[in-house]
Length: 280
Image (tube, helix red, strand yellow):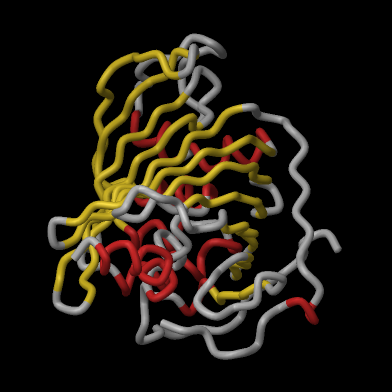
């Protein structure tokens, strides 16, 4: 079944970042646009704000891409990094990632890669652990998460990462750099989550509206890298939220490349979705 899904639930769950905490909790516990540049020739535009805000629309026109993600979480002197690889369809707002958890403090890897299906309004995870059978999927309503799945799944939805840039409050052109053999324009600024939610595409409006209420700060510092066609090649967001009285800093990086590759996402059958209790 090719993915067609729409989330509907609203509200703020008490365990805002429970999924992310579960993904890395055992480790922590054990450790204690279109711009003015012509294609292929990136450079500063007359309006950097427009260039950055338009990145999501340019990606939609591009269609699909491969994606690599990295999420660094730091709290109480402990730092962990979760990495993901896969592909994303910016028109359907669907993607598939293989998310790899970091090794435990002893240096051994005991965690199977988690398969994540990203869809409008929902996140599906397989090999979730926490008492979930290995052959079952877990479905999470992203509109009911305090962070809108910007950090919960251990990987920021690539479309959400781009849509967040619609809320740019201020931005400056830093300069031209080379990224994986491609010349890109580097922009640095701050985005407002609530503004991004109001300006977001309908599929991402619900999750970003939830995120606007869940983070410790309304603004998110970012670094964005656009190629000569205005396509977002890399974006790094720095989030901050409170968890059990501690401030957790999260740096989420998304790399996009291989535009135009086929990306097929198939949802699991309803009978394969786990309906039991998930351990914390």
